[in-house]
Length: 333
Image 1 (cartoon, rainbow, N blue to C red):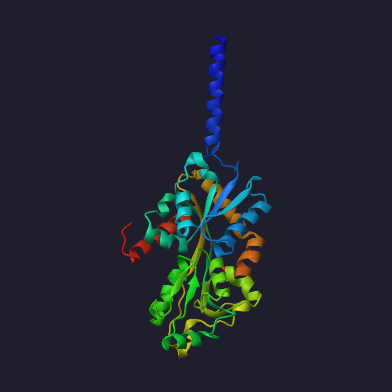
Image 2: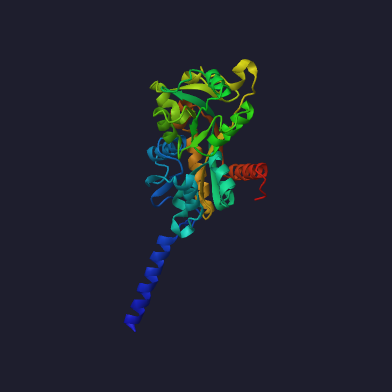
């Protein structure tokens, strides 16, 4: 009998341990505190804007010990143009570290996801929007065009000028630029790379003539004199070492309207993330957004606009953005 009771007690203890190990939800008092390694997925290659965004946030959280001493692992999962990484997060279940899984998720991730797959915002837990980014067109040392006017003249004379860039918002910006210029994709072909870092490498190697990039990914190469901004894809000029790049309305004697496709940068978790964990991470990201390191080392350095949105605002914003985008491409859902 004693052996039987001892066996039952041992089984009960094993079940308790297994449940504790597999449980990724809040504690009994209704709060959440990180208790394991946090995997932060980034669906762009190292060195790109999304990678810089991800690593800066995790660095700030770590330095300030806002994750209960737990370690962050940034996983650059670029397979399938990022769709594999997004699907991995969307399908992470509560017992599989859902509360310890985060994903950098931008407007440029949402667009191809909605266009090419059945994955949707509803499969994630939107946590925060942190900043708004815009883009520029850059030339490299081997680019045979000194100004954007030279690019226009080359295309109009029948020369194909190749543009490199990343996915999503880079493609959307390229398409908006082509529409305004009235050029076809044959006249100004676009080559898609897994991340802006790869596209910059292609520009430096002379494999493309021009590059679409956000300031964050390009700044160190501009400082080194390896690339130069020749067009601000914005309604206003940038400042600092990008100030010489004109907007589209400033070239060709005002023939064109400005083109800009603002890029919001946000963070989501799996759909199975607990409410308590989502609230925790949203508050942590609020602290990040207000930190001096974020304001000076990220926003100012990379010329982004601060745009923190809390949990409720982010969920509403992303849902509406998705609905508007789906309608624009003729999809109901």
